[in-house]
Image 1 (cartoon, rainbow, N blue to C red):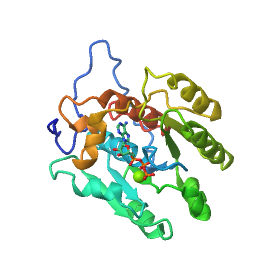
Image 2 (image 1 turned 90 degrees about the horizontal axis):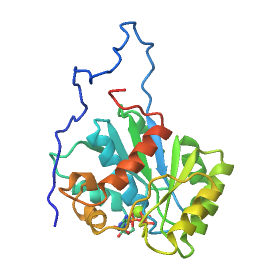
Image 3 (image 1 turned 45 degrees about the vertical axis):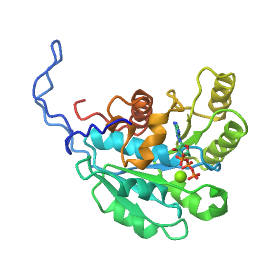
Length: 250
Ligand SMILES: Nc1ncnc2c1ncn2[C@@H]1O[C@H](COP(=O)(O)OP(=O)(O)OP(=O)(O)O)[C@@H](O)[C@H]1O
Ligand SMILES: [Mg+2]
């Protein structure tokens, strides 16, 4: 089993040195932009597509990048909550809120009041059963992410859901999860997801190290020598750019 490699809590880099050939930053005062929270919604109408795993791995990447991040678990099964409870004290801080699809406004209000830069909401399977609630959540989200497994009916179910999100005028994208890049279904799955709208250009492979993280309270990047770190680094770079969440050094 891999061992944890935890970074210090505030990992934001504050190096004053400039890289060689870097352009000197202007001394002119910059306009003040009010800090606002970005909301990411993990949603899909297919169970077991990777919503929870994607939610906490993005949260772990964000926390290790020094962002103030929170997760909201709206699944009564509480898989994200269980993961969060296992999180080691010394790991970069992730705030946690738990509610249900029937009553989540209080949890969203608490998350909104917590001075966070990023809040990631995880939803249960069979989300169509919560028609009114999911529309409210989609309206709230700055970005909806729809993970899909590879092959079988999964890509077409994800594609249909992505089209619903587009009709709701949400910013939304699919992520190919549990990718088996050497399998015959790899390319057709990507084409189907891309044709439905937007597809994250980085897939997440089907990896034991990723599966293991659920029992550790860690993101895969917090495991020593784990496979899958680069997969989520790609996903995180995509999310960051979709949200215009700039790197602290930019
Ligand atoms: N990239 C991956 N590699 C290996 N295993 C994975 C990967 N992504 C998810 N899994 C495993 O697949 C299973 C389903 O993932 P997960 O719980 O994240 O899906 P979900 O969409 O949240 O499911 P539900 O709809 O039941 O809430 C879990 O056992 C998880 O550990
Ligand atoms: Mg889940």
